[in-house]
Length: 169
Image (cartoon, helix red, strand yellow):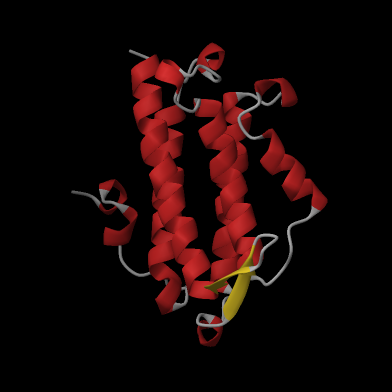
């Protein structure tokens, strides 16, 4: 098996990434690769289909981008902007976007790049610092937010995978 066909976490450490956030980086890189593969040649007319009432491919692509943006914002100890709140409110609403499936895939890839840049500059000494989440400022930590971002992303990639397969049969 060549290095490129292995899952990202089996390709070795990322030389420019702090050790303690490597698993987060690996998961996000894996998610991007899987989304690109899943969405290759995806029919645009199926983007907002909801088989059996489950979330659409379009929703998952918007949410993948949005959740990374929001969780990494909280990890920086920042509040969400008006633009982020507007994007959150429009997730899954096809009448509020003109973006194509490929545009949504590209946005996710760019968000992963931004997340990786933030991970590269993360001081490992800050990982246990408390961070507030949402309007209620529920307590988490930097590492908790970063780990949840990776876990939540992979959960939605799994759901995206099933939805794509069901509607393109």
